[in-house]
Image (cartoon, rainbow, N blue to C red; front, side):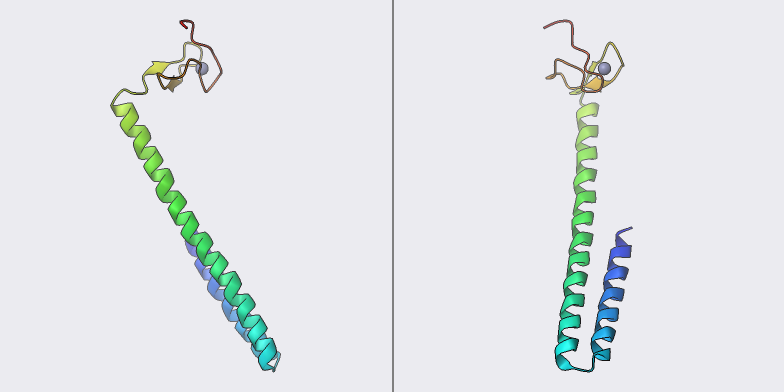
Length: 101
Ligand SMILES: [Zn+2]
């Protein structure tokens, strides 16, 4: 999915350079090329951000697994059977309050 951003970025840059060439002036070429370069840079950084988010989400998922495996998350909601942390006194899924306070 992220590869699309790279491809679009390269296409945008090529189009802007080509459009700049058709203007026939150095000024027009310069403007179009810099606009294209800016858009391409934005798309490339979006790609980087997306990749980082995937990494972060992956590590979140991993830490969730670690918590589960170590039975840190081991309280179950009496109402909807959702498993949640011991530190909470209500179910984050349905809002059901734990009887023992
Ligand atoms: Zn619940």
